Length: 89
Image: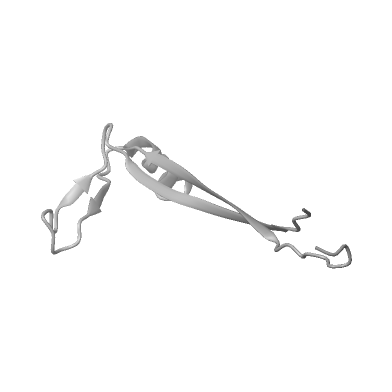
């Protein structure tokens, strides 16, 4: 190949993707504390539950949040870092 011909190499794109999963578990006492701090006068004996929508096996049931059974909140945070680099051969 003649020295005066320059070969241009394509850019290499590097993508780094990270997914972080968070899990928050809230028990009965913690939920009552949060609601009290929000200004609600709720006794510790209050029932806390989740209503199940109609149409499934547990249709219309109430799942109580008490004792060791927490309300779980899970979410993911996804970050993507894209970096285009020149490749010099």
